[in-house]
Length: 340
Ligand code: SF4
Image (cartoon, rainbow, N blue to C red):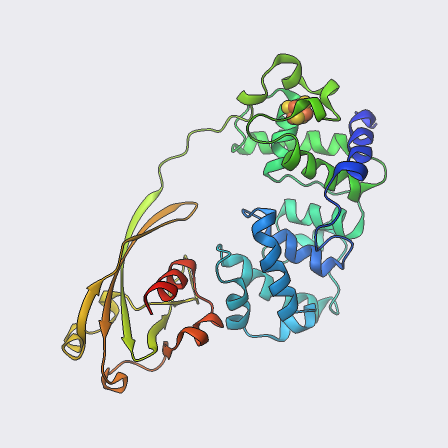
């Protein structure tokens, strides 16, 4: 039995008039929607839009993505962070191309088996790409639902996730799934904002416990998380004329397969006799979701780059222009922009 037809009806009519209906991936193919959904994980819409255009220009179809090499995919993702997402997209595109003849599957069980597609992304694809019932539980939706319930269960607890999933399933409409899902996400992003939501413009105000009890700014509650791990990184920016030495990161974990500056301990110290004029670059502090990186970089000049006896595999000399086409994380990009 449908628990709250009022809720979905209100959200659907609100979305049609007030929601976001001009996003570049809307009314496009399931491929476009899939790429946007992955990019939107942990990233805001306004940040995603230019990356989305760039990515789709480089890979206009699933086939072109599947046939491309990982370096090109990472280069198009450079600066967006969370690079595992790009690797998963690339792997999933190969599976879709080979196993599903280039079409994204339309059922939950097949979607969830693809790399990088979890419960919420599978729900988003079902509803936004195929207009089928699907549950989206991104940060915006969770906040709206917790406020409607007036629940102080910590938003980042798995128990809360289960409760919200059940509640979200009860709220699903009988049709107009796409508009409903877009509506609840838009409501979270535009009206039911993290701080000072504009409840006076909210279409579901009458059914919202937080509004009735004036709890809007106390919900959602976030459980205390242990502090981020801190890590120091020591990079060497070795420049020779207009070229700089980069090393592919073969280590598992962050930035795997991306191009970084060599670390101080990855080159034999004796080689430094060849290097001249050292300079310490300003410290870069780079925050990841689970780690805080302090990046110390020393710049060296090398008269003749061929004299540095490096193992050719895994190292490359590139100029600024060439580096743009490679998969490099944000701190490397910043250093190259400012110090090469
Ligand atoms: S009434 Fe306010 S707190 Fe409740 S859902 Fe609407 S915007 Fe959010």
